[in-house]
Amino acid sequence: MTAAVEGGLFSLRRARKGDLPQILALLADDRLGAARESADDPAPYERAFDAIDADPSHLLVVGELQGDVVATFQLSFLPGLSRKGSWRAQIEAVRVSDVLRGQGVGALMIEWAIDQARERGCSLVQLTTDKSRVDAHRFYERLGFVASHEGMKLAL
Image (cartoon, rainbow, N blue to C red; front, top):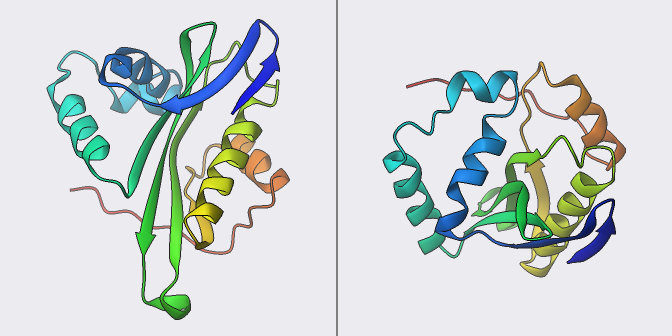
């Protein structure tokens, strides 16, 4: 997927291990991420990348603009027994560089992910977003997502 945006052509591709520094910078580039991400020790991120990259049910994606990584998200495909044994696509860790926000890049990324889910035969696309991310809630609602469930997490 390639689209013209301010500054050039934006394209999506599978992430490479060499993209990790830019991905980590994107993950840490907001109030929540800054508190939970740290590139001081890249080893845990490298292990996670290797696990994601080795599993065909997971895809780590980056968005590039003029060769620079400016966006990222993870797309996972989950089998399930409910909904007549259907598959779900889970979108996680969506980040877009602040220089591209408001140009439709996030919508392009999510639409691409939805297309991938359809190609894989998924019956549902789901995601979580922190309750404090009010702008993100509006963004996902504009794309047709519905806050139909209450998500819960338990930190270990």
